[in-house]
Image 1: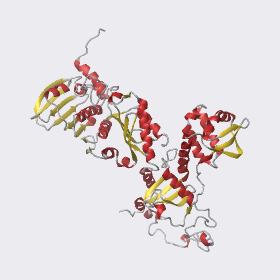
Image 2: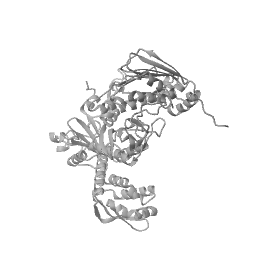
Image 3: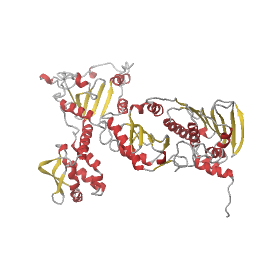
Image 4: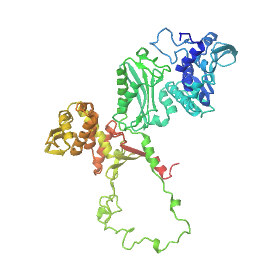
Length: 613
């Protein structure tokens, strides 16, 4: 078959296949043009998921007759001052978006500049232009796209439902609104609920816009980023480690004002949160990266959704450091969503449902509790001074004939000085694992094992950063019996494990002798630690991986060296743990990503009892 020149309309439809993937692609191109035109207010209207109608109205600079005619020609643009593609400072620059849209839909453009007496309207249908003709209108531009893909039924057939396409358009507008807080965005139409995001400016404008788009919940449970490294500026907000989602759809990345999807940025965020989030959970972030336009290539994807950094390592390092510093500055702070989950778990008893119907029975001897020489069916204990079951210290001795209660309550009134601490003062211990504390604003529940696990882990990291971890010798070496293959793995890794303060040696074919342990662990579960490390070495399948898995190893050590569930703590020990949490970064979550404490405000507790107003 001989080579032939394709018709102009077919060339435009092929180009449209690269740029106009779905209605959301059209909205993205047109709104980016409005932003580049200096618009301060953009109204987007859609119908049938954008397939029937897309209308973009802005109050930007507008176009005169010459610009309006050229705007629908292929490879015509006002976004490049020079014939170079390595210094892109605008959002749209490809030059064939309007021409491509006009080849697969009914396109009309009306525009007026500030100095023009009236506007002009131009139409393009199936690639054929008509106009422009005069039109009365305000300054700015109005673009209407109707019957998208009407002449390309194959593309129309593969579009999703109206609701799905409308959702994709909403996502596009959200990202553009997040990147441009100074622009007022309105989104409405017959296929959606209206959205309105007024412009914000001044100090805190970015936080205000993120609160508008992502919700106040995100604003309350995130920390602000603002740092510069390797000529890369990183700003935005990062969610607390306990404020996560089941997928990565709530992660937003912007480079020089452009919303992108980039593996470098995704990997950097994953690395920054690796120490704090639970497995299979994704942090919520909105990151704004600013780099020299010459250091990034935005022309590697037709829709400009992907890019390529010249120095990806520098960008990754800057993002990891920015997120890490912000999370460290947050200290022990945990997300309010944890408290909301706890409140949701509480249920008020339905007394009306529990009460028997009137007249159902008459109280008689068979319903009366037997109290002869007893208290509520149990033998009344003898009162022995402070062991009085009705005294504040009840629980330390318990009732005769009953198992010991699970709560130990402190009789002493807490000092006002301790109440001023963020985590307050300890009042009780429940189930030998949960500390009940009180501060000036409410009640706190602290998981003693999870909290101490994070404290030990952070101290381990600090000691390891300054050199080998100090160790303490065992008076009698502890022998741990293991399968022969596990003993061999531990023997091979013994020299590497000495960096962590753990000294092992082979003790027969199926045993390992532990001579020294990390001093930080104290009297820990050595047997469990050695077995856990053996399992880890079997999983990593390489002795060389010990150095690479440093965080995993010290996490295992911290888990076995922390205060165990079931250990009773004195009041001073509980308060010391609270003070250490306040002074330790990231103590709001354990090394597995679970929260270490829950705070219930006084108003939340009052609401549980119907006392809120």
